[in-house]
Each structure stands twice: as C-alpha cells, then as structure tokens.
Image (tube, rainbow, N blue to C red):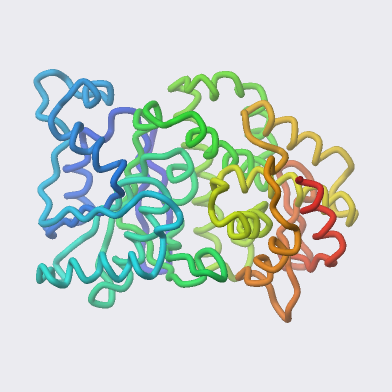
Length: 377
C-alpha cells in the first residue's frame, strides 16, 4: 500500500504501513533522519522482542526475515528502557530518560526512535520535543492502538495525578513505520483494545468504513493479515486528514476525542487498571447515549455502536465498581473543557459528528453525564 502523507505547519511526514516493513527500518530511518545518531526508547516488554528481532530468531522470521537475514538491526548510540504501562507515563520517567541522554553527552545531531505502543510513543516523543529544545524522532508502533491512532498526529506528553496528557507538546515525527506483523504477537486483550479506535474512526468520519468493520469483525478478531492491514491503513488515512486540517486542535480535531473524555475519566478513576482501548469503548457507548438523549443523534446509533463493540470482543460495561463521582471529578480536568463546563465531541450519525457553527464540542449537563457514566456499571 502507498504511504499516507500527514502535513503540518513546517512540512510533512510519511506513514509506511506494510507487513514485513520492519526489515526496511534502517533504510527508512536513514531517509527521514539522515546520518543522525539514534537513541532507541522502548519499554521492558518490547525490548525483549527487539532482542529477538535483531538476532534473526524464529520470531524475527515470523516478521518476514529470511534465514539469511541478519535481523532487524539498528545502529544506536544508546538504548533506553523503562517499565511498561500507562502508570509509568509520568514526568518522573521523562526526567529519567532525558537525564540518561544528557549524561551520555548526546547533542542536537541525535534523533530518537520510539519503538512500542502508545505509552512509548507519547513519552519518547515528549523527550524528543524537549531535549535540547527539540530533536527529531521516528514512531515505530508495535500495538494496534499505536498504529492506527497514537503514532499519528504529533501529540506527545505525559500524565499527571489530575489527568491524562495534561503536560505535553505538538511535535510531529519525521516518519512512522508500522508493520502489521508485529500485531500477531500481542496478547488478545491488548490487541482487541486497539479495535475501539478503529470503531471511533468509522463513527466520526466514514460510515462505509464503519460498515466494513461490521462485516469483517470475525476476520479482524482472527487477525487476518489482509483485513488488519486495510484497517490500519484506512484509520491512518482518516486521522491524517483530520490532523492535517487542524494540527493544533483548535477546531475539527476535537472529533478525534469522541469517547475519550469519559474514557480518560474512567482510566484515572480506576488508577489505570482499565486499559485505554477498553475505556474508549465504554466512552463511546456512554457518549452515544448522551447524543441520543440530547437529540443530536438519531435513536439507535448507540445500539449499533454497542453491537459492533461486542462483536469485536470489547467491553460495553465497566465490570468493576468505579465510583461515578470520581469519574466526573476526573473529567473536570479534560483539555476540551471551558468555563468549568465538561464539553464532549458527540456523533450526529454514523460517519458524521455534530458541528454547531464550527464548534465541534458541546457542553453536557451534569445529570446526563452522571446517568451515562452510572449506566456503564
């Protein structure tokens, strides 16, 4: 498939999506980053896979390497690793990674390679945005969630005790390299979590794509490689179009937050025991119900979204007791809020979001929010 182009204020970058493309990673990084010194940043789980890939083990061959290949080998000045998990996407980890680079005397001719899921991409991208006032970086996503959403768009940052991604920057990558073959090694729960973002993309921008996901749910659950590659490619096309039109989230880009305001509240209230993709699924269910009750979307849109999420093995109820007041309190710190109001990006129909004269979010009454969150129990 052809690369997807994402344009931003100072240029553009390519998103390469192809099974086996990791074998071309050194060449793709060289084309985007030149002869810069590379620093690989990853988490402790992906680091073990990387060690296998670089030695052409059977797992590397499963990713497309031939027995004669040396494996996927990058020449890096340093490899920095931190513990996996959203709970480690903090200012403390950012300080640790930045200090490690400073202690090795790495200068502005350095570039960072973020290898891993969304947490790795956000953290490594934030290090890149701030190290010596900014160095380039590449995104090499290895989870479905990261491939079709988190690695594209240039938003990087860390979480705080008050909310997700409240400290960060807009810092576009130099290139994104996504190999769907890496998704074959993911645990089922981690893999399915990424499917919620694809459902969101269909809901906000492409009714035909939403219908395609409905028709291909079984293939996607079985990780059919052709279906999976199409899924990643179409989702990236949708996100690329939105972020190209609104790089810094001053307008239409808010629609990418569909399901996310409630999701972030659920994650924070659950102390990140609830995976992001599952929280997004729950957020989509709740926000579709709100859209119906506010008369912004027709009756039945929530049921259709709920049915698709179930078909993809995603939760439509929280399953654990998450106190509604705690979720609502966490939502008060969402970046889209203004004047103390919680604002949501809500659907008008499958494939189209509500737009009030260029305002892509609407204030939602507290009682509706509380009822929608309580309904997830």
